[in-house]
Amino acid sequence: MTYIFGGGGILVILGGLIYFGRRLQILDDLKKICDELVKKTTSVDNRVSNIEGRMGIGYTSANSPVRLTSKGMQILNASGAKTIVENEENKKKILDIICSEPKPKTSYDVQEKTKKIINDLSNDTMFIPLKDYAFSQGIDLAILLNIVAIYFRDIALEHCGYKTEDLK
Image (cartoon, rainbow, N blue to C red; front, side, top):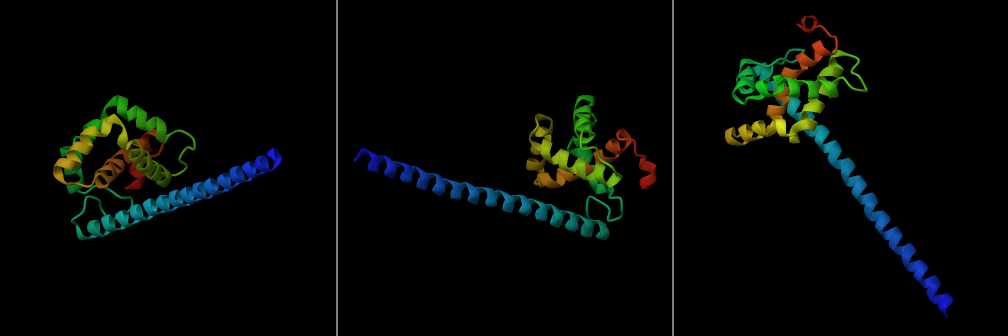
C-alpha cells in the first residue's frame, strides 16, 4: 500500500515540475518579446529623430554621422548632462565600460556601444539630476539619454583611438 502512494507522490511531483517548467518557459518567451519591443521602440525613436533633424526641428542632425543640433546642445547644457559626463570620475567610469571587451572595432561600434552603455547606466546615481530635469521639463528620459550618448560618442571615439575629424 505504501508503495502505491509513494508512486503516486512521485507522479504528483513530476506533474508539478512539468507545470512549473511550462510557466518558466512562458516567462522566458515574454522576456524575449519585451527585449524585441525595446529594440523596435529604439529604432522608431531614431527614425523620428532623423525626420525631425531633416526638418530642422529636432535635437540631432539627419546627416551621418549624427550630430547634436543647437537645440540638442541647449538641452545638453541646460540639463547639466554635459557637466555630469565631463566629470572625471564619471567620464572614466563610462569610458572604461565602452572600451572593455568586446572592444568596438569601428566608429559605428563606438557610437552604438556608447548609446547602450549610457542607457544601461541610466539608473546610476550620476544620472539622478538628468531624471529630475527630464521630469521637471516633461522631456522623455530616452531622448535626454540619446543626447548624452551622441555627445559622449566623440569623447569615446578619441579615447578608443579614432579621429573625430575623420567623421566630419
